[in-house]
Figure (cartoon, rainbow, N blue to C red):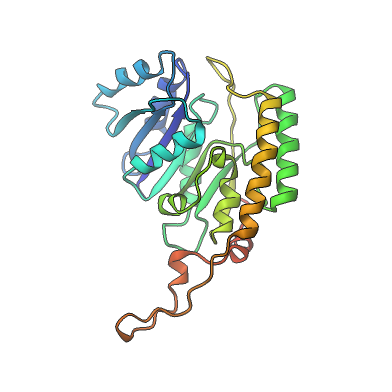
Length: 268
């Protein structure tokens, strides 16, 4: 499978260039189609760092997109996915805390687009490097989210994920959706899986989130996503008769109902 790697970035000078170079070293050339850095209106040297790399012939397929205004991480991910040319997307946070060397294992776990296996594979950080208060806040948020959404995802905040591009683009878009991708994929009938990944300390810059700010936004989003899941119905098509032909397996290409998708979840 050919993969487009999408990296949202906001004021990540000192991190983003190193992350891009690592990505090319970690993912084989026959798999890596392109790396798309989406700059969410940074005010530091993020753009200059990527533009310097664009001149290198050793980094084929590197692309740089910049937003006209700050729009948030979910908007940056969606911009990159819309621009991507491959049917499979991989995402990583621009701060360098995700390790690109974990990508091949997630890609190997993903089912080919249109297949019957997981349409999204997410990372589970096993050695969190964040300060203790953020680790505790993340653990509490994941516990609450799982009790409400029942998405069986132990670490939805982990930025390293791989998924089918077409399935993602069929999801309803809203700010903050990147934190709820497993639940949304399940709601639209797709299976999900999770793979342990490493976590690294931030080398440069500062986190863009505070515990309180993320908690307040998270409560609001959780209510919205819970409502959306209850109001979403994806029926299984059992007959499609163009020109008198019956296609009984069409549901395998468009996804099964949300409950079936949730039953397909597994954890590696």
